[in-house]
Structure formats: C-alpha cells, structure tokens
Length: 137
Image (cartoon, rainbow, N blue to C red; front, side, top):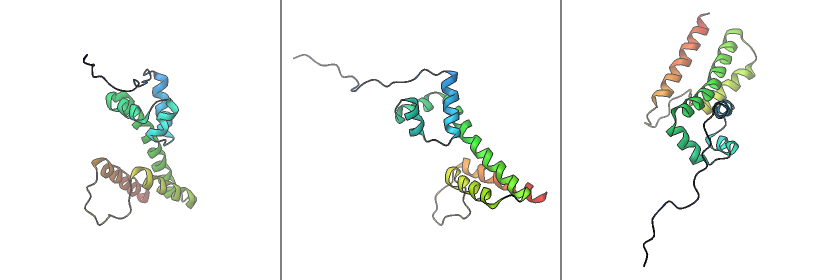
C-alpha cells in the first residue's frame, strides 16, 4: 500500500493583495462601524481570513483601529459640543447610545467582579476629562 501524504484539506484561502486601496477601504468600512464579518463579506473573503490578516499584518490592524476610533472621536466631539452649546437632546442621546453600545462606556458598575480592560479604562478617563473641561467653560 502506498502512504498518502498528509496535507491541508480544503481549498486554499483567498488572501487579497495588500494595497493602499485595500487599506483605505478597510479604514472606511471600520469607520462605518461594520463588523469583521461584514467587512470580510464586502472584500470577498472569509471572516477567519480577515481576522488572520489583521493578526499577521500590524498595518491592517492599525488601519482598522484608526477607522473605528474615528467614530469614537466624532461621538466624543459631538458630546462635548452638545454639553458646551446646549444643543438638541437627541444628539446627546445618540452619542451616549453609541458610546455605550460600541465602546463599552457604562454609567454604573456591574456587581459582578469582571475585570475591565486597560483600553476601556483609558476611554472612560478620557471621556471624564473631556466632560470636566466642558463643564468648566
């Protein structure tokens, strides 16, 4: 009997070439708050492949984070403007919803003893400082 070589099963992954246009698209899609799965579908690859691309290439990961953080910056800026200028309550409500749902901000601590990540703590401190500055003016 012949021994069969053991190899990977299935078709090989389709990994797109990393071009400036691809990086721009990833940043734009992350700025629209699309999930990894949604971005992967648009790019025509699997979610697992997209996640592996982000893990393997720090440039892709940085571009994704930059796009995602741009929305956070816009939300915090709008919040600051609303607090300072006393604009429409709807904008404030929308920004708070966005900060809570997408960036993990919370008004109350949960009673369970789950540890917060360092990033979330930094985000909360940043927001607290911005709000303090706004109230001083």
